[in-house]
Image 1 (tube, rainbow, N blue to C red):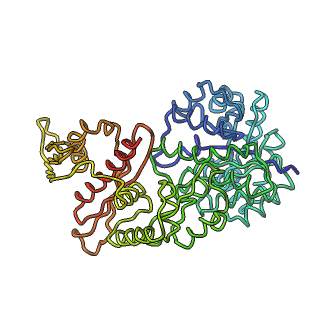
Image 2 (image 1 turned 90 degrees about the vertical axis):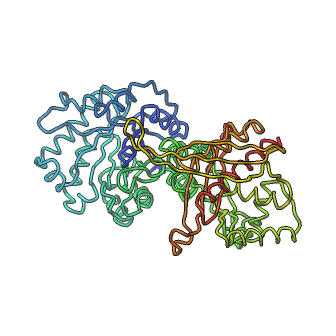
Image 3 (image 1 turned 45 degrees about the vertical axis):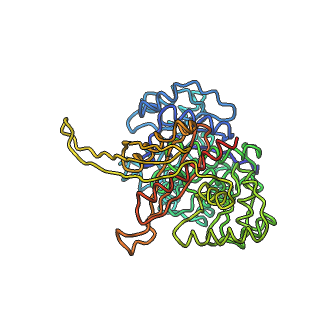
Length: 526
């Protein structure tokens, strides 16, 4: 049997069933092109005829280089002929070269969900696939609830997939629709099915309800399946689908299986993962294997020391292979190797005594509530200030923030924040007032007004995220507050800063101060 595995992405269909996810037509085009660049075999674009977005997407001219555009739908309806079924015709009349239809393969589902006879369900499968073949489209049959159906009535579940295969389906995809099966069950059942349907026609579609979707997919291919369905970042209904961002590099780097994704294209994985996160406006799981921000981060001093000598001591692959990067975290768990790694990135060379002094400063700051794990911009500001490499670009004299909650002339309840700030900059005094959506926005607005004439590049500075963490909750409203601010500019550079105080406004100001300082240092040195 061939070791070739074919990859089927269903982000645009199954992934869109995720709570809170609604792709626009443009979103779908961007994701589809990224998947084609990566080199997956099938891109399931959605369900033509089901909604205007999917209709418009399939009307687009999508000139894929590597992938086959696939339309999803279901078997003909009870009481309809396949030729006259409106749902099936919407698929056949679409621009898709491949049609993936879902049909029941469980007696429980046939009875409870469809309320039809078992024989009629088999006829629906047969008629639908034959109609797809007649229209010269490539049929794929998703055997919905197959594993659960196999456990209830093995004979009928097998009869469903036999019917689909004999009717001409290119792939018979076994679906763990409820996501409740375990790898040993998947392996054993696929082994049985492989004696009836050849592996080169057999696929797996696993949901992640027991956190086993990736493991179940690997179990299936080890048992003989040669087609895997999944999504970018494991997106999907309930707990998600099998994560192709984990499966693709695992297949290429860890097994003897081959795929049509070229090894050099693995560098696109992290980018592809991030494209989806950015379109959904979410940060994504930072600990995702291969592509997560923390996938190759090292915090413990012993780990960092070993990685500095040889990365293979604590990394299973080179992060650059999948388009990611190594990150040695600065924290109170850190050793000298952590400091050295970050200093190297900043092109700073110090002797051992200077490094030890910096390490003590960092540990003291973390004892006070700071955390530089992700706030590397604040770490750089701290280090360069200690070394006398960063000046104060302005000096704060005072600021005051007021919040007003009132009814406007239209009878609407509004809340408005106003900040007054007084600073010294370039031997001049400036006092400005800023109004904003909340006190942090108001402070930022007032600071910009005061500084913009002196430092025009601040025009491009944008605060993109704001997070608050209480680090001494036992103190109630007097607790120490940790604020993280993420910033960006027109150069698409992203950085994170931190502020700590018992006063949330003060903590926020400190994080803004570090963000401005970080940007001005890099702008003015170039």
